[in-house]
Image 1 (tube, helix red, strand yellow):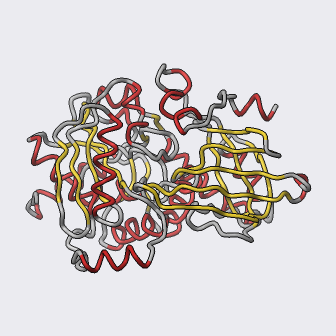
Image 2 (cartoon, rainbow, N blue to C red):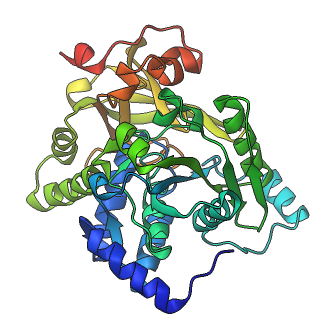
Image 3 (cartoon, rainbow, N blue to C red):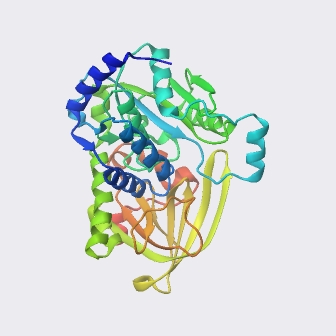
Amino acid sequence: MLYISYNIKKQISKEVTKMLTRELRTRQECEDFVRGCTIMGTGGGGNPARGFDKLTRALDEGLRIGWTDAKQIPDDAWVVCPFLMGSIAPKTSAGLAEIKDLGLTKVHYPNTIMAAIQELEIYTGKKIGAVIPGELGGANTPEPVAQAARLSIPCIDGDYAGRAIPEIAQMIPVLFDKPLAPLTSVDEWGNISIIKAAINEPMAERIGKFLAVAAHGLVGMAGVLLSGKECKEIAVTGTLSLCLKLGQTVQEARNRGIDVPVATAEAMAGWIIFKGRVTAKEWEDRVGYYWGTHTLTGIEEFSRQTFKVWFKNENHISWLNNKPFVMSPDLICMVDRETGEPKTNDAIAEGDIMAVLGARAPDPFLTQPKGLEVLGPKHFGFDYPYVPIQKLIS
């Protein structure tokens, strides 16, 4: 593991703090940020409780946490993309028994993402100058922010998806033929792996996912090492600021007593596409992904209608009254009908009353040739033509 002397680290931290364009100073701001990340996580993106814990621990340690405008990152700086990989499915009794049998009982790396970044730096011999999240989500965005502060390097106000995605092969760098490998993987038990090379992006995803399956949980990974110039040319920028705005919008709408999901949809330039009670849920944990379908029965203006949404970690395909409706790469986000609090797919249960929000996909998935290929309905095995959400809603 890489160690930096206290005095040097303190000086570096001061320099990084000067670069921050937005700082999270309170637990309330951390909560708002995580809430917004969870909304944009489209049902996946990691457990928000984990994301909040990582941020507040860093805050309690006196670290300055926040993000930096991408324009401030030097063109020649090395930018790393850290992320969590694995399934968010609940643990089964059989899985818990195997965890015990394998001796996975003592946590050696509570900050797996930080460790993965350090391992990549050691392996490549390149001094990492900035971090950018791979996606938006309740854990997968806050944790890179927290660990960047702990490593005294800036986190960029942006990400490589503009939403949450189930596969690293769907990251925006892939659309621009940027390499994912080398990739480092660290699990909390202390197992460390390096993916030196992969013959293609799906194999990089598959290898990484099997490392997570082997660890019976999540692994912290780091890769997609690009120059600051390359990163700025392809990243979806401003998304961390957007997440904070969304989380604050929810809180402000509650305080003012106005319709929270409506206010949230407006803040994300989206639409309310359904309101209903969850009347059925089917799910399975398969090859490191959380697969399933939620069925909702309509309420209010959607009374006597039905809505289904299929997820692979995140929400990807929906049906309104049994007809194909909004689908990836457009966003399908589920929040509590009254409070506007977002829920990840593993937390949604029968009986929950939800509002479903929809929003346009980030531009690269619509403008780049590979965009729909990697995140459109046919990628997930559905032979449906992609119809942009704005055409479905208008």
